Structures are given as C-alpha cells and as structure tokens.
Amino acid sequence: MLEDHQRAAQIPNEPNVTWHQFLMARFVGGLPEGKAGAFLALAVQRITQQSATHAEIAGLLEYGSGASLPVVVECNGTIDLETRDISIHESTADPKSFVGRVSKNGRVITLHLSSGSGSKSKPVHLVHEETLAQLVADIPAYRSLSVGTEGSKHTP
Image 1 (cartoon, rainbow, N blue to C red):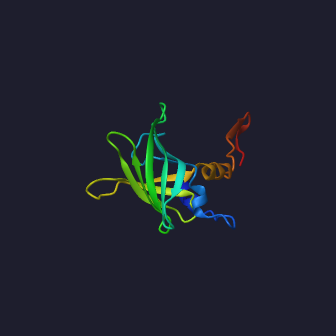
Image 2: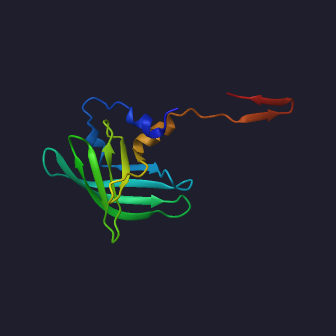
C-alpha cells in the first residue's frame, strides 16, 4: 500500500495547472523519528520570482508534538524553478536548514535536515494540505464489527 506522500505525488494535475501553483499553501507531514503525532508543517506565505530559474520564499515552519501547541518559526528559502530543488532556513538565533525537492506535480515537498558535514537526515515528506484532505476523503469508511445476540457478524 502506498503512503500518503507517494499517492499525492502520483496525482495528475488538471490541464494548465503547473507544479508551482501548489506552492503558496500549507504542507504537512509526520516526523520520521518523532513521537506519535509529531509533525512538521511548512506554510508558504510569499513567493518572489528573482529570475527565470530562481524564486525566493518566505513563510512559517511549525513543529508539533501532537500533545501540545506547535512551535512556529519564520523561515525563508529558495526554489530552483527548473530542477524544483528547495532550501529552507529558519529565522532564529540557532537556525535549522532543510534541503530537498518539490515533486513533479507540486503536491509533495521532500526535505532533509541539512547538516554542516553534508550528511542527510531521514526524509520528511510534506504533503499539500488540501491534497492530503482529498486523499483522506477518498478512503472508504470502514464499518465496525457488530455483535448481535446470535453471535458476531462482520459487516463489510
């Protein structure tokens, strides 16, 4: 079974809809080494095209644990409009940096925590929030096991 980010990356875009039209949105994904419910979200609030191949972004990164309010920090970054490579940097005193790529259809951003040594962390797959809601809505509802007085009966 495909994971949400794999399914989202395979969704074809409508005619005349390009990958970069999805960028001005919120992307969310689970952290690979986090506790249950831990997530990272990127909300892109501004995109400024600097040249035919380069754009700058600004927005917010949210770190959530699932049990408390998320920590929200401002961020900025760059996108290569030809390769879809992206880099994001926190605007904090001790900033984290991420590098990665936007999927061909623009619905998934895969990021790695960037370290000074050049080693990559496990990937974090952020899915376009509206696409994620669409994927969840497409999952058929599962019916529960109902137990009657004459034994149990599974209703599909």
